[in-house]
Image 1 (cartoon, rainbow, N blue to C red):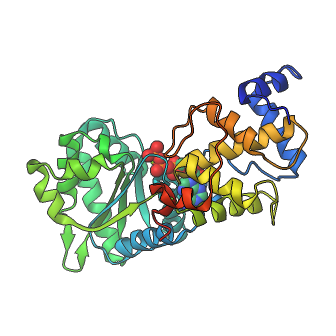
Image 2: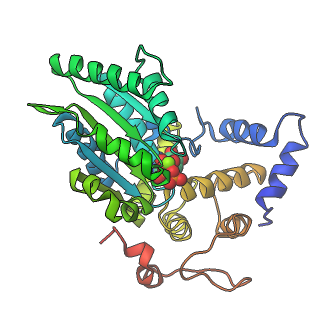
Length: 325
Ligand SMILES: Nc1ncnc2c1ncn2[C@@H]1O[C@H](COP(=O)(O)OP(=O)(O)OP(=O)(O)O)[C@@H](O)[C@H]1O
Ligand SMILES: [Mg+2]
């Protein structure tokens, strides 16, 4: 079969209409496969949340930590492993329980901006640019919530980027408590550098207050296969036959079990299938897509040599066995 590189497929599709090629291609392949929505969008949409054992456990821990007023909780994971998606699920949970929260997703901020964002998110009635006023209003909100048997949550995504002074302010917020526990539950999510940052001597007081830690690893091969099937099913294609089990194992290997990469690969494969008018993805398409995405993976063959993975080869690779043991 003749294959086209993804960029050529996009150019080809883009030439058909004057709107953006990405918009055309996604809506066209959705119609071609009968999807009600895009199965491999890169947005952290909780509706597509796949509950692998570790994701399920981590989410349960976050919820437990909030409900039991544990104080500080840290969620770490490599780039693209699902931290923000999980925080979005937590946000849905908090909404459903009418729990007040502030969600800070831009962590490259000064401490003044930090207090301003908290005041904005929690809708504090005060002069938002004055740290003293924000702290006063925040304290009053926390006490009112606590009197009603409720807690309040501060979620910080990308926390590995936080300035030291902002981390120190967060630590001080964590000191607010009444007899029944912490008044504010703080969830810090970030890449593994966050753990290293928290090891710094000047943050040992904050480190001591962390009562729960969750870490997201890349998917196991089994999870990758179930994840792809679950996303396709959610988009309207149950019992998918686009990706054979061998293909899924190969996708897992090349994406190293990282959900964001799995999404990008599958999205590009669906687009290629659509352009070539087939409903089954092939290894040569995957080779093209991998080349376009400049993927590097363990056990990669030199260019030109077709990758063919026996079960033994797959099991020898660290990414295949990790988490799947
Ligand atoms: N458990 C999951 N269920 C469904 N989709 C997921 C899951 N984990 C990750 N994804 C998908 O993978 C992509 C990346 O996820 P997300 O943005 O949450 O990763 P992240 O860990 O926050 O990455 P970064 O470190 O770059 O901030 C998103 O498209 C998301 O939908
Ligand atoms: Mg993220």
